[in-house]
Length: 256
Length: 256
Image (cartoon, rainbow over all chains, first blue to last red; front, side, top):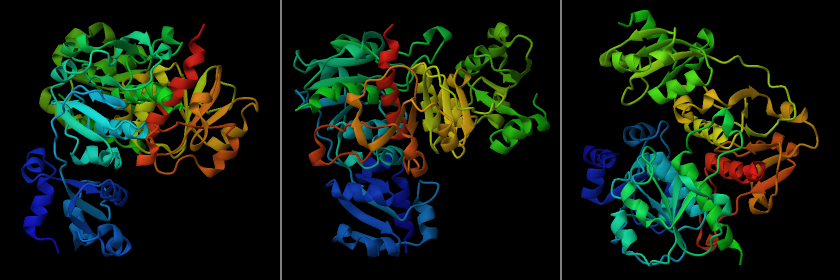
């Protein structure tokens, strides 16, 4: 049984203000919850069906766990079809993002507004072995249910920090390449990269902020297809651009 | 002023059944509507603010146009913040998808369920000069408001057809390469492609259907980053995979 107070707490966490107040965030869905548990994040409470609890006893360990019925789950879910489990995790401590040479590629996001885009970009970063995503302060919150959902557990493995991007970039070693995704620049086909670097992706509506442009060392562009003459898309979706650039720039990091 | 009957017609088009019955679909937002108008699709009616109508007289031509107020727009919009214009377009005639050698790359989608993914893939195809998207019959409808929105006008330039994929693939010339995106296969880094071919992308949840696997001539995989040992994402989002493969395979089509 879920008390009224508990139901209220869980639903309040749909809101960033309350996530920060309680220092908690919600994760839904069996795969997601297991990914976060194994990713080393600290769960404080689990709400699940009896079957799920029985099946996952060893994953649960001594985390406080409540058996909830389908009707109760419907009250707290943010999904169209409620899953078997919802867990509350502690928000990771937001270490200050101190500018320093990263060990691998870093994804930097300037005011990404769409939670689905942010979640997918975190998942893409994870796939390509990128362990750090640095976001501008106006980027949508990584711990909102939609981002958590779209990141498919990758948020448990990738560190996401929020900071003032211009200051951060100013503090980086001058020889570190900063690749900016723009509509005009060197074709991505011609870029040969290996080692650490920054991949800077602008917002869906406005691209990269003008204040950040001076920090870009390599302006890059993803060449459109050859039938440009008949007209084509004006731009790529921000998360598509991020995926393609992460793919291309991580190519040489693979060759050992 | 919008009559009750007109309001009912417009909102009924949120539903596939009524789109097919009336052979109409909805487009919202100024850029989107203009893209569809210029893309050569036939608009039958426009609902817009007075300012929009004044500004776009030459785009409107002799299409029947209704001036509607903000409150009326709120009743018919599918967006969180209603835009200045909503237009009804005729559904393009669904020509039967006859298997034949395509002139360029073709994107083939097997049961894509998420409208945002489908819309983004149509936009990506458009960017890379791919003019044809062939979908399985269970792929989500391309003319639903969410797909139209996410495609950002690209649906006006890219032909999207629905067919039985196995039969379609059986009818293609045997020497046409069919690239299947799988978790195991030749690394995409090693693929050298030019000319026409099929890029086959599986569904978000189940990948490529087993019945289609025999038709694949090249199994390809997008190599994950080098920190696999510390665990990483189990897969890439379907539309990210599509974007990366379209990018890589269209590289050589560009060199003139």
